[in-house]
Length: 278
Length: 232
Image 1 (spheres, one colour):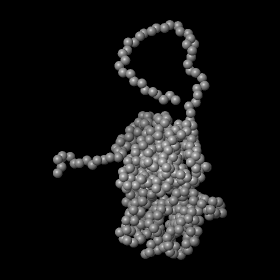
Image 2 (spheres, chains in turn orange, blue):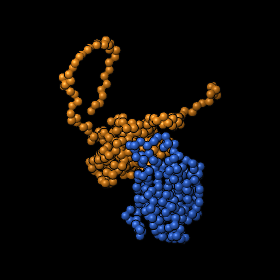
Image 3 (cartoon, rainbow over the protein chains, first blue to last red):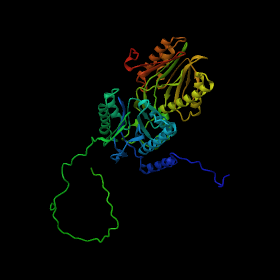
Image 4 (cartoon, chains in turn red, green):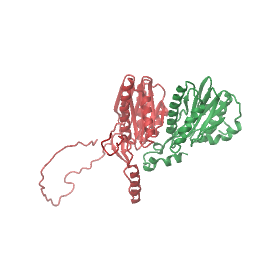
């Protein structure tokens, strides 16, 4: 027997697209005035993965862009899904982040329910079914890789919900440069060091040849023995050294008059935030 | 066909493409494609190219578009990769369930009708052109085509996908009823090779499968082994 007069509202979790139509109208109005609406932060990105002799290696750059400005110089694009499964994310940063977190939760629950360690194909299936349900509105392109009881596997999943299973993959805006490195030098059953070098080279190609990718190379090596997450494995894009100085010696400009007006100030609160100027 | 699909997608109209992202990061993945299926005495021969594109970028150059639905029933997928993969998974589940209930191998016609049911009901949302082919005990080898829109019709030979337009003439003039399995394989590989030569959205390798009472035989014809024609 319901005590309230209002009918029960079903709990609606997940993504909400209520503002999509409002945004479309606003965009139209703004463009009439000559302005453009703020763009969702995309991870620009070069992500790549290969299957080698002992498992899989995933690689990613670390630049996150807000249109034409670098929003984060060192973001993490290789996300944890399960102890033996990791996922690189490209596309809209928030979508990739939240999607992988949801998958991680679901996979852990599923694994507890089955009493078995998770399979890479399970993650891929859940991902593609969810992304298909949202018909491409969740803008995350993902490379899922891992080693499970059936072996080493690598899948790519696209925003609309399609997937491909291949021995080497690249995605993101820097996929073009990266895939060219793979097409040239990939061989099945490569040794660990060769494979690491190959993935590193592919990401570096993306960093140098794509404006949306930059900063460092992250690698994640997954084998039967375990996972090695190599954050900042390589830093190919070093900031250049300044050739000259912009400071002038005191006395360079002649001082004609000098007036000092002291301002009485009380310090209310003091806090120090270190800025990364490197 | 691709333009129609992207124009109706709300998402694409909302956000414009940034200068930094090439179009293949935002366009939907399509199986461009040339697919084909032929009935012969005792079974069917099916074939497909292996190219999946996002805009002008080839996302997968070795795609397998011949998807098993049941032991002796396959489907050839063309159109949106996401839509066809999702439908194929759904039909595989439905057919598997039905087969267990029946305690018998399912009919090809049943599989084809399941595809039609999904493709017709959601015809506005989907972009999927599917050819269902297989062997069953009741009617032997059969080919059913379920094009965009959700029609269902049985044909002795069927071609589909963007590359199919280039080989209707070849098919009409070279197909004869009551061919052998080897003749069918030769016809399919020849036709696909011609389509892949002319259609930009088709290419890669040729995947073939022959389905009969004894089972499924699969083969791959690599790029350098493709049948050659005089103008190539």
